[in-house]
Image (cartoon, rainbow, N blue to C red; front, top):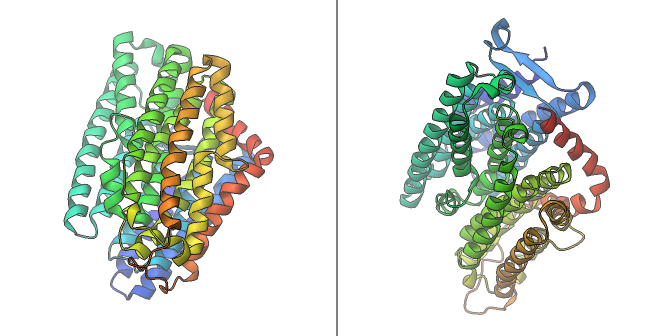
Amino acid sequence: MNTLPLWLILTPLALALIAALGDRAGPRFRRALAVCGACAVAALTLTVVWAVRRHGALHTMLGGWAAPWGIGLRVDDFNAIFILILGVGLAAGMVFLAGARAFVKGEAPLIFLLAAAGNGILAAADLFNLFVFVELASVCSAALIALKRQRDNTAAGFQYLVYGALSGMIFLVAVLLIYGATGHLSMAHIAAHIHRMPPRLYGAALAGIIVAFGVKIGLIPLHFWQARAYAAAGSSMAALMSGVMMKIYLCALLRVLWHPLAIRQHSAALTGTLLALGAINVLGGHLMALAQRDLKRLLAFSSVAHVGYILMGIGAGSELGLVAGLYHVVNHVLMKTALFWSGRAFILHAGSADERRFRGVASAAPLAFAIFFVAALTIVGAPPTGGFASKWLIALAVYARHGLWPVVVIALGTLISLTYYGRVFRYALIPSADNAPTANRSVNIGERWPPILAACGCLATGLGIRWLLPWLERAAAALAAG
């Protein structure tokens, strides 16, 4: 037994308590505490990932109770990728947030609590504790959205909380159906007894799992909360929700589908369903983004579309498709956080999130424009970026199994995204005399370097594909093996 997975949860929980006590101090202390704590979590994350790489999967059973009765935590090559995304994303996000503005009271404790819940979602080895951590993450996310106490934020936070509660109820019903049929909550034991489950109950539980997590990841038509929530949360929180938290829920969905429900053995047709759902998200998300003028809403609907690309890769039903989907997960973390972070500078300099007000921003904020340009080229899929490489692998995987039509969907999505990102560039490059942006706004190192590193990562994942793919292949093998 290894206790490292447990520390992934306990460390941010302890930091949340310390940060809550630190809220009584001044803003400088809150900033230093938040950044140092996030870096500590990132260091622990790297330690866990290295331990998995050297020794294989890590298991923890709490309280000395053996499976299936004890609470189990498990980290393997598959969820280690997402744990790394959460740890590094938390540290980068805290550094950016500390540089961009002062922490609101209660913000750092909620972010650490969200990180603890995220690690719990990723490492949970039984369905009930997965449900508990998902609900904790929903409450923290809703609180972070509503924290500014403005009218739009409060309404968006309450909306997120309501839809999160409905998602949780659906997931709990699915868990009860599985427990009633198998007598177990442990994922490993459910997988061994899932054949006992009557087909109709299995189908109902399967549908419940997909709908519950479909709300979380923005699966059309369950995506209705995202645009309003991202716009209200602010660029820093939107980057955390889209770039990091969405991937955590996606990891949980895949683990439940592949491990306890064993869809590859019991419902092989579901991979084709995931492909179709992904295609709907690609076209629907891009078309909705095309209709937006507000940059945050545009990026929110773009996230809906890129969930579709990931699902299309997974829905190809092959090892190559699964690797390609995971590759796009890594790329989307980098390009979407870079877009939200650099887009914040656009909004501040223009005084509005409306892209038509961005005239002159390219000259007023050249660094932010360059970062946005690189990230947008990546998310569109221009070579030699990581976005091009992952889309290309997804296209190869779906073509090998399902023919030409999924490739056409990917190509159409790419053209539509090129249209609306090109529109943003056009406005930003137009000189403006009447809409004078605040070009002299100071930008400190904490606000500058995380977006620069994210933009460099967009290029590195494309140029370094030869070194990245073996890691993703091990992750795909770990998911397939259960």
